[in-house]
Structures are given as structure tokens and as C-alpha cells.
Length: 286
Ligand code: CP
Ligand code: NVA
Image (cartoon, rainbow, N blue to C red; front, side):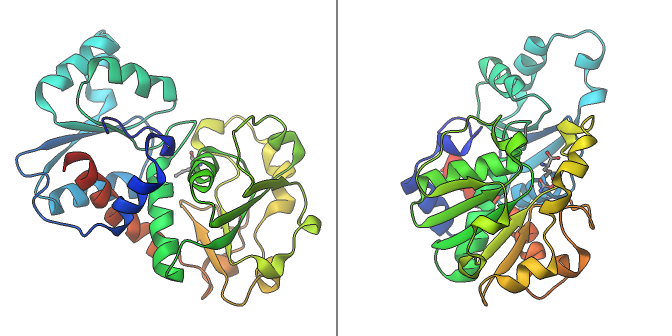
């Protein structure tokens, strides 16, 4: 595999290979990986930084605004220059096209660290967290709220794993606009009335307004009824968990009581970002 831009760059066999691998300490010996973030990040940047050093590699934080691209150097020449020094690039961008464009000039692996379209590192890591928590991937996931980049990668992952059932609960005005390919184990509803909550053992959500969406304030009122509340959680299966990729906006997509409840495994999820990315890097550089 050269680039990891979407979950669909992998198949089920290789995802399982990644999830089941053991972390080592030398895969990235003598390798330098650039971390290029056009947008804010706490977990992704830190987990890659630390994870790369645990694999014996060297990570370099590249500040977009300090590059000559912010003066007059072209996009093409910027990535051709990076190609001279780096063995790989972790790239977070507001425009997925830039990942595709960068791959024309940067000839080592590029990992999507979140784009407007997808967040595949989050989904690989969430699969790992689910597998660790339940001892298997079989589960019934309810996604509440916006159908954003994180939701897209979750759908791509669910398409590959028939043992996962995913119900997306989102307003019709949002879901009608999404023409995502979905398999029979993914369904979309606009109301919880259509769902047997007792069968749900994983409730997931994400912010209602993503970094790419900051102009869409009307989404907040549209999505208000899709907040994950204690009432919803209390109707789900006894063993149910709450997951959120973070950062969270408490009181909007989730009540603070749920966020900090014993059902919430958000910090395990955050920790696993690092473990899953170490496994991913081992797979790419094996
Ligand atoms: N979940 C996630 O990608 O978090 P950051 O935006 O903090 O990296
Ligand atoms: N959907 C969110 C995810 C942040 C990790 C965003 O794009 O801002």
C-alpha cells in the first residue's frame, strides 16, 4: 500500500492484519515522517508524534504557515521538496483533493490525518477499540447526528465488515445529500422511533459542526434533537458503550453526564489512536 487516504485503500484481510499485529520498536529506524497539519489537532498530531518515536522513527512537525508555500512557492514544488527528505507524510487538510494532488509529487506514503471527506485513522482506531472492548467486532452501532468525515470512514469500514451493523440517525435534509455507497448492514433513519434501542450496544457521535463546516450555524438547531442523552443511553443494551472521536462540544452532540459516564470509553479511544497508528505504520513500512 502506498497511500492511506481512505478506508477503501485497505481490504478486510489487511485491516484485520493491522488490528491483530503486535507493536514493535524498530519499523521506523532511520525514517523521518513529516506531520503537515493545515487544521487544528490535539490527538492526531500528538499520537503520531509519540507513536513514530516508539517505532524508532523521527517525526517532524511542519507548520504550514512557516513554509514558503505561504509566500510564493507552488504546491507542486513544496511537495517535490518534501520528497527530497521525508520517508512519509501525515497530512491533515481542509480539502481532500490536496491529498490526491500531493501524491502526484510526493512519492512516499501519504496518510490522511483527516480531510473534509474522511478520517480513516479514526476508524481504524475505533475498530481496534471495539474489538478490544467486546473481544470481537460484531456489534450494533448507532451513529447520531451529522454525516461528516468521521461518519463517512465508519461507513466505509462497516461496508467491509458484515459482522458490524450500523444505523445512522440523521436529519433527512443531511442524509438526502449524501450519495455514499452503503452495504446492507448500514441503514439510515431520521428518527429514533424507527430503532430498537435495546439492540444497540455502541452509540457514537461527533461534533455537529466540523472544522470544514464552520459557516453552517443553522445545523445546530437542525441537529439539536440528535444529542446523545442519558435517556437514550438508558434504553440501549445493558453492555452498551458511548464513543466520540473528540474533541467534543458538551451539551450539543452529547450530554456531559453521558460523556463522563461509566459507559463512555472516550479516553480508551483516544489512547488507541496511537496504538492503531503504530500498527498502521508497521503495515505500511513492513
Ligand atoms: N479525533 C481527532 O482526530 O482529534 P484531533 O482533531 O484532536 O486530532
Ligand atoms: N468531524 C470533526 C472531526 C474532528 C476530529 C471535524 O472535522 O472537525
